[in-house]
Length: 266
Image (tube, rainbow, N blue to C red):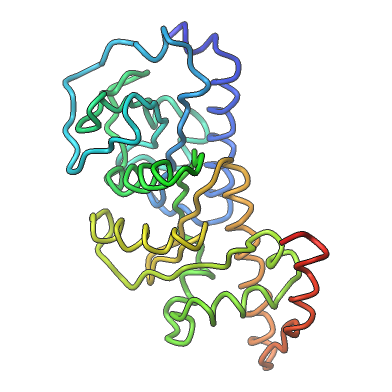
């Protein structure tokens, strides 16, 4: 679409989506079509662009997303690989527009590519956060090997335990993920039950682990969401490196972690 391609701010954000998709692939976090991204682009689009004609019939949603009425999202496509999103985001995802009543959406650009099967979960999270007054723009879901591995260990299915362990491996983790991480017990991927359980965790956290599945981050900036997950992954690698050397890592002390709070305004 010429109008979209000429929108420099919009295309810059699409470029950032491609950039992060490439990171997910090169990190080994995006096997086959694993993971998905949704980004609210409404503020970057003109009224003309927001009113682009639908490329197909309206697609009903399972629940009304009233806080998202009229909003526009880029969403990675169902069955699409992150390595290809990185190369050509408009051939592997689409722009969707939520209807005025929040009960359906249209695909408006550039191709009639159906969004990820986890779209209902993404939209429920966007809807919840916006209804709570948070200017959330991003839901990022991916499959970091080391972090998923931790959720196969029963002690780490406690939010306080896994948060304390990961925080204590490196100061930056406490700084970059100050709210810690939530844990959702295993649910079938793509279900509303998974979305509802995740929303409960988003009351306190910006990053949520899905047991034996993956991790999800929300926020106002896609790069910051990626960086949060990347930092947690670094902490997990430090933890496992110490364990492989034959030691239980001591980690930072409570005082060392607490001293970061005033130092960095956490």
